Image 1 (cartoon, helix red, strand yellow):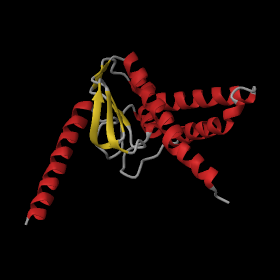
Image 2 (image 1 turned 120 degrees about the vertical axis):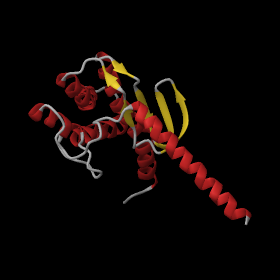
Image 3 (image 1 turned 30 degrees about the horizontal axis):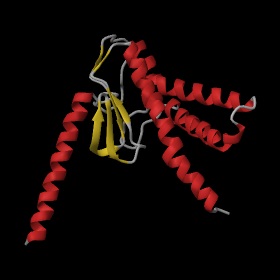
Length: 195
């Protein structure tokens, strides 16, 4: 039976553990891309209007699950560099999950076992959906498909002409257009109210 303790656990999982796993996942792109001379990197957490931006961290108003890493260019323009960038979330989540699992198996963190078990679950969840090559609902390839296409064909071969990871400059342009539309809708609603 689903009780209050399960509800608290669910909230803790959704609003504490999941954001941490997602943040680590997105940071892995940043760390590996820095090794290859990334230009104009940005780590966007959430979606919708920008709440604030601190350096390369862009915090948005709505829920954190839709988060992404963007950049304009890599100085090292090679297949291996791109494969390593797209494989980085797989490696980081897998490494952290296996390390925590090893530590739990050896008696570490027993008092927070439920927390760490859920952390491991979410880490493996993202590994599964990153490693199995597939296209997402919007037709964009996941990391596994990008890596597969880079290894097999040396390039992206699906019908989608957008870059694997959107450029930071393009994302900033889209955000400004989005905010402009929101302001127009607000003005229209205000005018309707005042009639």
